[in-house]
Length: 77
Image 1 (cartoon, rainbow, N blue to C red):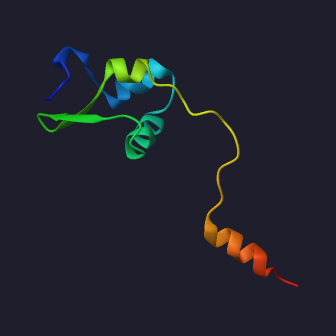
Image 2: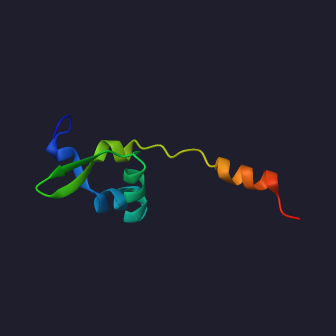
């Protein structure tokens, strides 16, 4: 485990309780690369300090994909 002390590592379930969100919300952040994971003894952990300091993105409209724009330009009649 490079860079993280063992006592700073918590499970994704613990991270979810800490943040008051579901475990799947933490898994989503991991999948998006917003939280880094660490493997130890076949168990996946995240950094407690990283979870505590996590700042969500500002809400707003999501950017549309170029394929949707192309479909809109052609339009249906």
